[in-house]
Image (cartoon, rainbow, N blue to C red; front, side):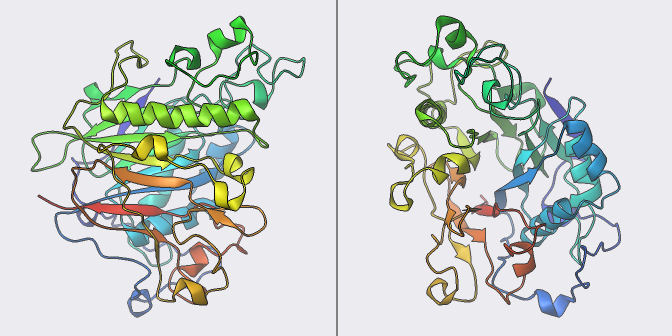
Length: 406
């Protein structure tokens, strides 16, 4: 069951929700002095702007219970690096993908209370007053032989690839209140129910088609109550999830998920039903921001570097815009050791290459002040948080944008 975790008072900007908990140095790092924090690798948000960010967390384990136990006490190295990354960028709204889900939503609550709210390595903690998380299809047994290996069971036969139910979950952290009664989730929508779907012919039996859901994780529509706006801003969160070495059907499924998302925000998803049975998508004129992983790293790993999946299905028309966020860094990209990397890249791949997989895409009608990818160069402030040689650093990079205040 979907869950809203409300902590403290009603939402406000991150600057007004900082924690009073003492500084919390990350493992092996000295406490940072204020002078050393001055760097253009981070950008201060203008007053009245709304900063929305996403980051692929990759916090998983052998089970949700194991992940929760590892996170307890606030000493999980990767979660501390993640929290410090969030704190130096200070988003008002944060979508974490790749975060294990548990039935009682304790993992999301623990990340909020014991990591994000605690100042890491001299940073100021951010107490997000509103947290949303819900089940995803990752690791849920389908009861069918979806991968065609003659056996039923295992991660490839799950409704979404995963070792256990909740293996690849999501969580949303917000300083703004969530319109709880209007939240919609789209976990159970069947792939075969999408008109003109891309299910490969002869790939699945009638039984398998009757259980195979389109989202590898889920799609969430979370209306945020933003002060000064009479209408809500819809946060549309999702995370594409493919098995290692994805087959033709997995890539087709990813493209149909992107199409479903595009039609949802453009108001043309008349066929799409949510988990409560209500049909349709956003209405014309709704303000929205899409955030999450829209091109799964496993999928991208199989494509030549110059032929990665495009977001044509998302960016066609005039509903959505791509601000094209690039690395915020003092050192020009051509002078860096990773100069061959895409400046918009958000995820490292095997072999040292990097691709763009996480996105924050606003409605075309929204005014965007600035956007960026947190990707400091070696020697710059924050490099420790993205250093590929540090096992605690995630392969994902935080990407953000600022919606201009009214």
